[in-house]
Image: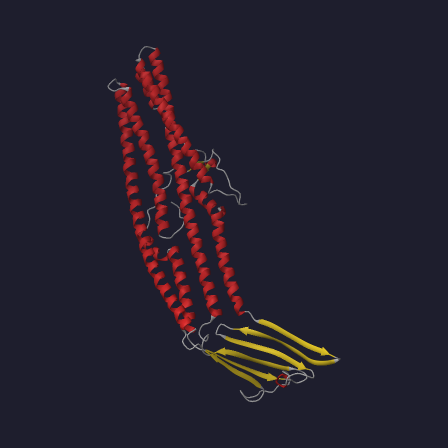
Length: 464
């Protein structure tokens, strides 16, 4: 009688039922929500705006500049002088500044060199750097650095998102494993309760010794303790998961306890493409940031090299009283104004020192980049190996679970015919539950390990 009751208890529960889809938060939906609404994701997008505005700011160095000037002096009912000037200066990418202006001066005490026709004088021309600034100058250097900064913001965005995706992935699968473990232990506790009640009834009927009820109670209490621990781990993991859930309005969200994760084994685990990942390391966002720094230093080096040249600036303007009535005149023949500016330090020690510092910084940065790339490649190999080991362990433990379940069934049959004991049946059952919990933990780690291989290669979220 007692064996029939206990045998029924052992097969009372089936494996945990799958929750309703309406209450399930699957991994893909969760990650899309994180990508759209998490503050770090929003911050990552804002870094791109910084790069765009920096480029816009640098392009302002090439904006046309309008200017105007008025200076007048009246004393004792006499006009000493009245000077007017207005014009526009247009910088260009080639280092040439185009300009046009209008001047009008009159009065009793205007300097002779500033004397102009009564209707004023129009001029148009350009100024050209023939030495320093011919091939490169501050304006072009500033714009190039701004463009590099824009590239850096894209790399920074990738770094932020990749870190967020890895952390969010790890949090989700920890939560999924904690949920599955709680289900396993809940099942074990239910079986222990049924067994304890069955043993008590058998004892009351005189078919079971009193010590068996003590053993059954001990197992019940032990499983209650393990379930309480699992419930605490599930609560902690759900709280951690909630830190990645934000509403569309930027408000933090709390995960409802009724919501459950997808099954750890619902989808086939994707194997990482090792060759693709290895080829992507050289384009890792961290290395791209270093490459941007190197490119910026090279811009600085180019600018410092240009500063070794003497400053030589040529200016030339055509002059005319009236554009409508002006007649074309040969270059440098009548009605023009031109000039040359030339200067240079004799020893150039300041410039040569600055250039030497920049070259040293480039060498230091390049050496650091090479070392960082080596570290990233070693990290990738370690993560790929970890994934392989975990994948093998999952296969091993999965086989072990099936073996232990077969042993439990065999022990149960032996017990039903009086060739085994309650102690042995319980031991087999505990082994099954422990191996299922181990399998859940390994499956969760395997999912995270896949994400780590992509993170080490500098790649972001992908279904896993």
